[in-house]
Amino acid sequence: MYKSWVLIAVALLCAGVAAADEEGGIALRHADTDINNSESLQRGARNFMNYCSGCHSLKYLRYNRMAEDLKIPESELAGNLMFTTDKPFETINSAMPKDSESWFGKQPPDLSLMARARGVDYLFSYLTGFYVDKTRPWGVNNLYLPSTAMPHVLQYQQGLQKPVFKNEPDAAGARMVLDGVESMTPGAMKTEEYDQFVRDIVNFLDYAGEPVKAKRQSMGVFVTLFLLMFFAFAYLLKKEYWKDVH
Ligand code: HEC
Image 1 (cartoon, rainbow, N blue to C red):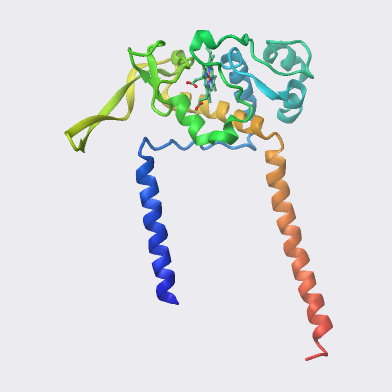
Image 2 (image 1 turned 30 degrees about the vertical axis):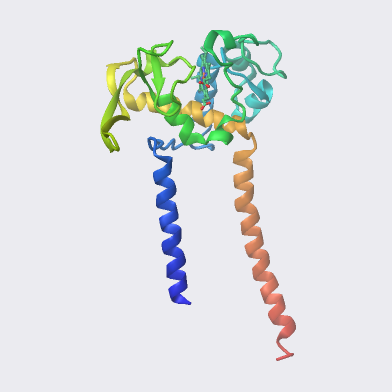
């Protein structure tokens, strides 16, 4: 029995390594977001409205719901966060016309469910992964979404990065493959500052993907504790019932 467990473990390990190998690509950066950090969520909402909502909508989220969840006062909401409407019960639409596909080659996608679809690590990596590439229409490419149609809208904050290549042996000898990026011209923010700036946006997008997430998680802890307590009582009761039978 013991042997077969070991065999299964080894097989799983090999499969895991093979899968990781196949994926190749560049490892995602860890987003390290915290959905319970309401200050980060508030900053993220502000950054999103200022730098992303021009092109991207959040069509499943209403302004007033967001204000309530994130504890943003009404005055702040109307004055600083609502650019496309003056009605707090409306969903967060972008200013982008429907035919903007011809501007970018692709319509900027709605970001409501993007964090759920791709995960926060991907979003964090994507937003920190732009690098200079003169062959692309906007002069930038992305480590995690090759030939992306999105311009580097946070270039002023991040500065510019250049690609780093490595030699990889293949059938024809060796070829150059993209290995990462390094800073080329500094932006208005230091690296850690920019990371935090992006982390806040990603945190906000994580919230937008599932506004009840924080509540659901704390509820989960509560329910588990309740079940544990209930189990203890049920066990005691069972002992009580059966004590005379044995
Ligand atoms: C000038 C318009 C514009 C702005 C502003 C903009 N984006 Fe985009 N974004 C695009 C376009 C166009 C695409 C489609 C890219 C593609 O599929 O190649 C895109 C795609 C994306 C994607 C999807 C990537 C994927 O893997 O499919 C994410 C996530 C994203 N943007 C996040 C953001 C965030 C966050 C901001 C604000 C900091 C932002 N964008 C600002 C135009 C914009």
